[in-house]
Amino acid sequence: MFIVFIGPPGAGKGTQAQRLVELLDIPHLSTGDMLRQAISQETDLGKQASQYMQAGKLVPDELVLQIIDQCLGDPQMATGCLFDGFPRNVEQAKALDDLLAKRNTPLNLVLELRVADEELVRRMSARKREDDTAETIAHRLEVYKNQTAPVLQYYADRGLLKSVDGIGTPDEVFERIRQCLDH
Ligand code: ADP
Image (cartoon, rainbow, N blue to C red; front, top):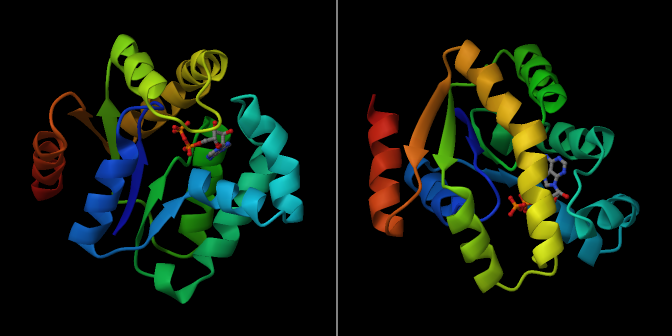
């Protein structure tokens, strides 16, 4: 099963993604995690990506697609995975469609985790990641609205989108996600 998990920064996507991959027993493909790993390992890709991440901007598609293409070549990903933090713009969504079409494994479902802006800012201000400064938080929310929200429409048009309310305890939110999977 191939699932895309989309939500604004601070929505609690990481926590829910972890639970979801355990439940479904599929690999977790988080572009944010992979980029942070590339940066800490000081790879070429990491060096190119870090300035964008520090500024709260999207890393260029070309770099991100390089990661995705490489991951999808892994036999572990042959029958499914959870895409987390990807696609982040419509170009990436189209590129993913092409990659999956070539493999004859189209997307099964797109899950959106919804949380209002004020709550997102409150949650992100309380955690301590390097790119969680007031300025980048505001910028990442802007990027989400301008570039990632259109991805939701792209998938809604294809009948793949299901939205889940992200307000509540982690258990409550996960129960809503489980219900989406049942239908
Ligand atoms: P969050 O959702 O909290 O912003 P992520 O870990 O998903 O956290 O992403 C952190 C940063 O990594 C983003 O602000 C962006 O710079 C970069 N990034 C992650 N995934 C992508 C992607 N698919 N395309 C472009 N940039 C990405």
